[in-house]
Image 1 (cartoon, rainbow, N blue to C red):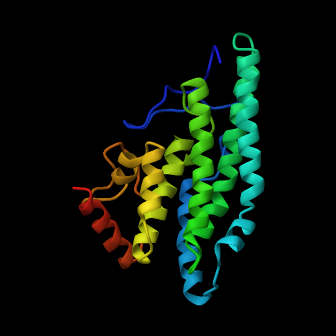
Image 2 (tube, helix red, strand yellow; image 1 turned 90 degrees about the vertical axis):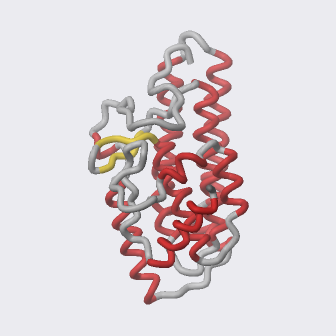
Length: 237
């Protein structure tokens, strides 16, 4: 795209303002504070209901195959449009990228809710996050800029990449707290160049924000999750 919108590709650094569209802020995506509340509610519900969910069930409930097909097809369509019209097609390409970003945002809510359900197959959640991260990286590689779609938290807009990073952090800590393997999760976090950001979202002490200025959104963590997070952080030293 010859005139891409959004900030230059960032994997570290302080919070930046994302390019927004003409739609109202409320329609740009789910609120992270609301997502955090949903997690806390789901944790309490999981104490009462203990379903056994295998990977196939989770994948079906999250419509994994349809989302995967949609995002892969959309990114390929964006690439084809850029190849065919690299000079004058930037406006349409921007709209296409925004649609891809919004599709990811809409999927994040059920992914996050499903993540905290007891006995859920975390491998199925990981597969969903891989699809999201691959689509985001695909857009970044095509335009050398962050997707313009944003998620709204109580303090403003954050990038789509940062929202997905939070969920990768949550998956890693959840798996460790449940004594489940974390090797594949860590490999994927590294593959999508998110390892520093994920570790930055694990508190070292009583600090209120990460080094990049983001909220931790970990108020719902159980003692087991806090202990697991501390071990994850210490293991990296």
